[in-house]
Length: 407
Image (cartoon, rainbow, N blue to C red; front, side, top):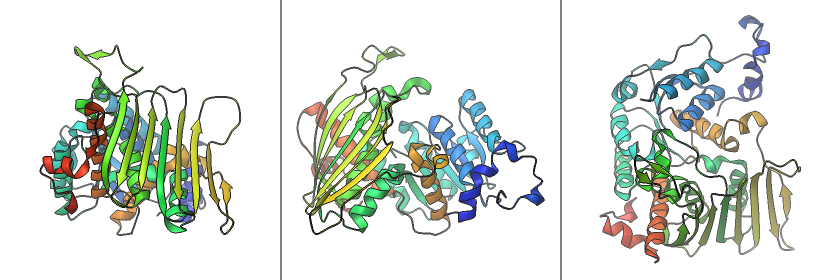
């Protein structure tokens, strides 16, 4: 983690009103020089976030980008210039050049989901640390292939499942996994009600064959949290869902959108923990909720942005226990400048963890194996919706020629 002086002063140091100060007169507002240089592969909405957050975190500079879309490249230059007006962002004309440039010591892959496997195969030839956006792949075989690449890869390969760094989930993990405030976990429920998917270049996120399906593309975050809190591997999945409202009349290149906009997903774990996920993507808000019940108490937490003028907490967490344990209510959060970097600050600490990992420090960032199991649940859920039956995880993996016990 960057030192505390950097965390305290950096947002103020980056404010233009302090540009009048000569470098020699900066102490509290001194900007420490980055010690790492990263390239960003894919400069869409996630890639732009990686640029901003890396520059804000401060220990790494973004050296260059590769993206075939000219508008994405121009926006990347604008985002970079906000933090380094005198600098120059290198633009590569090929993926290979961006991955193998000896001037950089890390890669961030934020290309469309279906391209991750091909990009990863090129990126690992560089031997550099890699942050691979979620979902790490859209098919079981591709996800498994990446796990095999990782096993023989000597550098860090981190998966971008940054929701575990959101304030409510960070605090929930502290209460449930460290303090054992609610005893042994028995059930987990997560709810997400939100707006529809936004537009993407070539609208790839409107089609399951490119995104992996809604329950892979978006919900892998929540399935990672299921696995994280259950501390076990999934045994079976049953899901129902439909395309009830969003993009029913949407066509692109003559093809109709086929993504789910609502679903209920039930997961049973090998250790007996049961988990349920509730998704609605046509709600006029952004709301997430987690409820974890143990044999000695219950934890509930939520994030809320409903665009109303009514004042209510943006984040809330409660731990309710019996007479022999303490209970508490809190409003977890990071400083505003960190939360505004994306995903309520989760993106900031994902990047901090990436650099910590490069520097040999232990982190709680998602590993490739954890990324694999988050995708497994999503794929099983998509299959269950189509077939209307329970999907046995062992059978699904065996049918794909994968031995889940070794992942």
